[in-house]
Length: 512
Ligand SMILES: Cc1cc2nc3c(=O)[nH]c(=O)nc-3n(C[C@H](O)[C@H](O)[C@H](O)COP(=O)(O)OP(=O)(O)OC[C@H]3O[C@@H](n4cnc5c(N)ncnc54)[C@H](O)[C@@H]3O)c2cc1C
Image 1: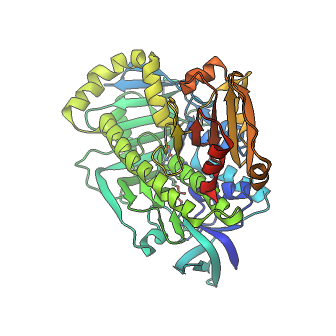
Image 2: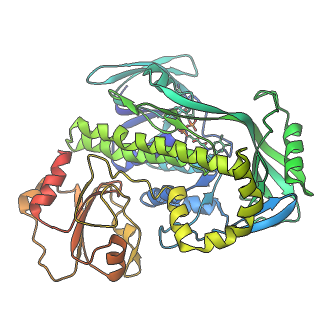
């Protein structure tokens, strides 16, 4: 078998990458050693940036319809509610999806899988990557089917979306350094009877532990996540469900009845990332490249964004004649993000459940009482939401980012969200091409782009002309006419207040 791209692993990262490659009409094969998508709930937190990405392929609304939006968090300590935070519209004005969505990973994966099959592509289930080798021109991969039959795939590129224990990463001999948390985590999907409502994320604040109930689709259905105390010495696999239930009741410290258990699992949390996202023609994405604490619901969302960053670059190299050096920018952009994410999730986890006595004091005796006030402040919303929702991820230091002029929003930032004449600006940006956006005050003449430039880029860039309204001027921090070139992933490639055909041409030449 021959293909352009071999995707190893059909978890959320591999499936979302396949959806993107369909969008660019890139030829690929996707395999997974499992029989089908996961039946388990695993990652339930879906961030705004993931929904913005899905909107472009028509999957945001269907995913939202499968999930639950928690509008508030209630904080308990010592068996009593100590505080409440409203966060249903925490990101109002920052994203069309100003919340966090809870959907079981199994349902999420099924939606992505259905997208793939509805585009006449398929996942080759029960097919395992055994080994591979690469040359300067391609990758040769040996696959084992459930029948024992061995098949060889010749691909131009291989992407390892094969999870934390990645064979691809091991075979490439890449480092995966970091640390492992001492405490054992548990997760349980349950039906719960208690006196509190189903409309909130319930967080139990403790001195050195973690317990949270997430409302899930279905009456009285919850995802419970927690940790055993540090001295708990059993290994994963030896722990009985009864021990988990006992720990939940002890930590929640209030009346509750778990009437049904759909699934439970225990795990140790690692926090690690690779030293490099690629080697030759092989790339890593998702958990194969980075793993962190579940704090902040970042893991799956980050994997989806890895694939989103890589897909358009692969498409441009394979179909539009871009040089292979464009693929180096995948590591250049995603490695700093993985490094930063690891630090943030560790810090967040320590604040939420670490044993530092100062953090524990703040957590128990200060935070619950001031949280509601804090989260009502715009300055706090503007700090917290972009970071959790992943809309703040930026590639300002990338070699693909060129800012000319003084702007609040820089090249390398995600295209900010706003409305133009009551229409989302993203509605103009669904096509998988570069976008030239000109915002004009009408005071200066905008030169025409020359015919030869337009024909060279025909079908690969579209253009949009808007009046510079005050909200847009405020958002970008400029009152003069300016233009943007958005990359196909809707990150700003170039922003400048000096529009000329030469500027545009020079920027686009990077991709030739
Ligand atoms: C309890 C829990 C809660 C979590 N909550 C969140 C959350 O709320 N939000 C969030 O963003 N993240 C969360 N995460 C993390 C999230 O689940 C992972 O980040 C995500 O599953 C990673 O996706 P992936 O596709 O990269 O890897 P995986 O989901 O591990 O998928 C890898 C796939 O590769 C296949 N594979 C492996 N080796 C081979 C091979 N040799 N050949 C063929 N196929 C192979 C596997 O069968 C598997 O299907 C949570 C994780 C857990 C455990």
